[in-house]
Length: 143
Image (cartoon, rainbow, N blue to C red; front, side, top):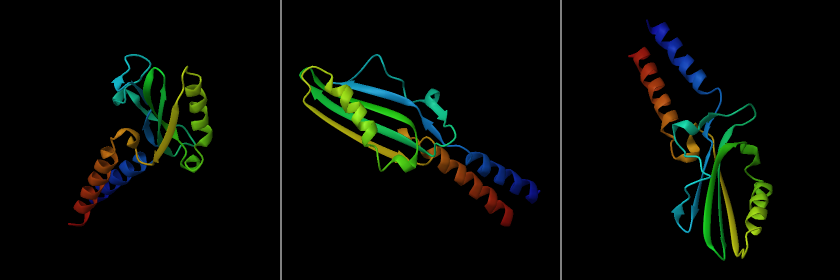
């Protein structure tokens, strides 16, 4: 029985470590109010198993102001931890779009990377529960 429990525990850990899952979604606030269109909610439907080569989740937060007011956009995506140190090209692209708005005034771009499942939208508990279940299973093997 303990051998079966050990095999199940190891299978769960291996399956849980294969590919990172990230939220792939976005949000937009204009003058502090949520935009009604052009967004994808960060919920269970936005959970995405990232493709080969992606080892992190990323969140880009872009804020800009123009004559018409202030906007804040967040993009939650699959990413590569190795690109964390050089987010300038991506932020430059966002800035180019922001500058195309009439009366452009200011711009800021921030990127955050993380390496646990669904960590880019505040839902990091899934991996913690996986580790907790494995610990309980292994604890049962020895006591």
